[in-house]
Amino acid sequence: MSRKGNCYDNAVAESFFSILKNELVHHQRYRTRDDASREIFAFIEGFYNRQRLHQSLGYLAPLEFERRVSDS
Image: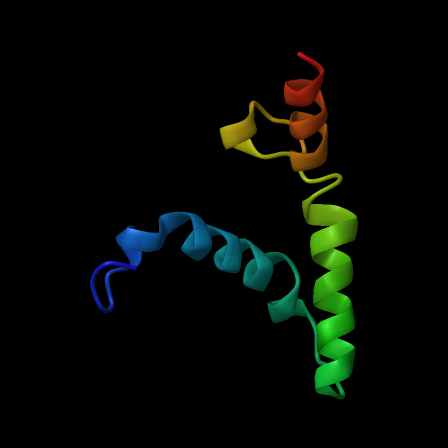
C-alpha cells in the first residue's frame, strides 16, 4: 500500500479478504487457531483457486486460467 489506510491502493487484496470473510469465516466458529488455519487453507487451495469462478479471469478458476495461458 502506498498510503496508510487507503484500501484502493490494495484493491485486489481487499477484494480477496472480503470474499474469504463473506464466503467462509463469517459462517464458522473455530475452536482453535489451528482449526481456523486448516479451514482457511482448504478454502483457498481447494475451492478459491480450483473451483470458484473469477469475473476478472473471464469466469474461470485461477488454476484453469493459468493452464490456458501456459498452453497458448
